[in-house]
Image (tube, rainbow, N blue to C red; front, top):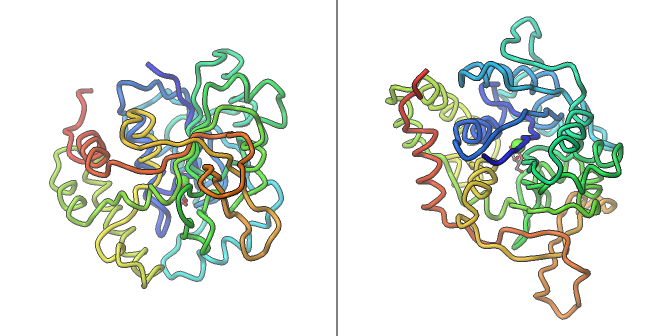
Length: 331
Ligand code: BDR
Ligand code: CA
């Protein structure tokens, strides 16, 4: 089984918080091909403490009792998070901080970045880091340990876009790149092996109200709960993005596509690119530019493999078979 660490900012089950990290975690934990070594939590969709809470409850719901959940960065490297949170808070129905008294499930004391460094030293060249939140924890680990990037087999990033603008938190920024562009920059310059699945691809894969209804009818309590959360999240998105036709009937499965493309690289088509992120301009901060050599200028050497097309049906089959419609696994 392939060893992975999932670096994530999960909100599944929290009012007005993105459910896709949680679905990605569930897909990875239930994948027999993968050995999930741990979940490292980062500030992002939710605060660090809420992310830890959500992750612990999630692994508890999935029946996993011994999976480490490690707290990492509680803020971006330099960006003031308050201005990002203000964008969420403007939408009615966004949740507040969690009561830590409700915590369940496993945890671990070590800091997420130190733990990732230790794991990569223990299994050099074997671990893939599936990074589905802002890249702060990865950047901290890369800065702390000169050997970290080389010891990691691959960083698979949900960030940016390789074929068009990424439009969700801003007109040019996907959430993960926009929240901590300096951290993404550290990762892109690390010399590590990088695969990027951007918002241009992940916005093609939707979980619909029809899918949610099927989940509600499942015998698997986890699928039933996901069905409820999916309807609530689509309700929220319809309020937050009134001009996005997709949210009349569905929500994007950004992060699960990253897991699925790692399980089966044939789900996406790939190209090499020189990828950079804009750090300075007010207009374009967080814009990821992937130079695939399609213009008249000569690109700098490639630093990433980027997804440029997606087999949506193949993804949906894999995701729905494994998460939405499966009966509960035998205890
Ligand atoms: C990314 O931001 C979050 O909302 C999603 O979980 C995904 O990781 C998409 O821009
Ligand atoms: Ca995410």
